[in-house]
Length: 433
Image (tube, rainbow, N blue to C red; front, side):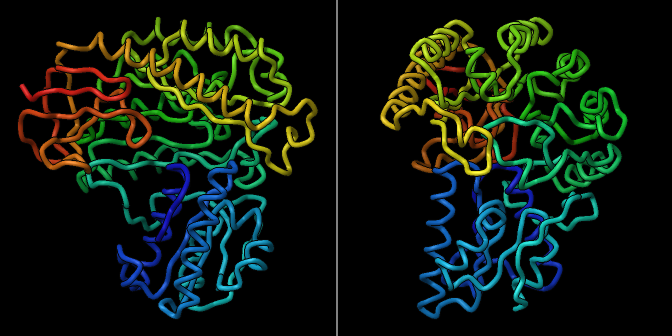
């Protein structure tokens, strides 16, 4: 199984793996040992789509050479471009859309499956079989599916449908099961985690969920990813501030700060939803770490718009920032907008913004030298076995920086107290104390 894209897509892949294992299939880690390859694709932006196509083409070469019996393509790209993929890559034997994880057994066993579009869509629950692909001490938990927002650059509502929350007790039961299996870190994911429960009649569903999850033994860290600015309520912030197991970390993509650009993006534009929101979050949750993401080069973005964004980044000092060059997506409202920004300018602005954030991150990290921190050890560093690699509670897996431990020994999955000895733009160096 090759799974690409976001953690939400990874959870779908893990459910598919669970179905395959239940059906008696053996999951292998090497292509040379496989009879079948499943490529779970991402189709969100150009770079992700190209990565998915490359993975499918690589698997197709194995299929064409006779080393594979079957090639199955699933996920967002298959859902969007099934006809084109099958036409251009005839080695594909079966396809499944975003709402068909349970169909993976039929696809792998030889049935000629294809993408099906359901109005309701798929929503995993605690009874869905699941095979974790993350390290045994950490897991993603998808609390809802779909999206109700109308961002002009995004195709996700077309692929995933309307917002649908899992019942609160169902999520609690899954996390309880994961804790019993040894998972210590829970990362809550959805297209919009902070809207959780609204469709079920819960006014502050995420806050209620956080309080319940914090009562589960053995779980040490609970993290919220993919928050939407207008749905970060006081109750959610109170849960973050008051529950020790809920880490002081918030991933809240703002996308831009210029009002004209935000209007064209169909995103929240009021000051209270941008700079005021950041001030409120920091006031209500002291010491919180903030991650956000921005899109540069959106149609109509002027030099003045970009200057506002650059100045904002320097002034607010986010802990973690992702920067994406705008990517045209057919079927979105932004696809036909005028005043296109040249590709060269988009990439230039992206590099400039990343340089600003690099300075900000280095400045913030230097303030931590001498501080004692709790670190979750992930294992030896992938580039050298002389160092251990770990994370703070304010560093999400895979997307944020890391803590490099150059003095001391500890097992993967353990929590240790460290003293920060060096600071780099994204990583910290520490020793176990």
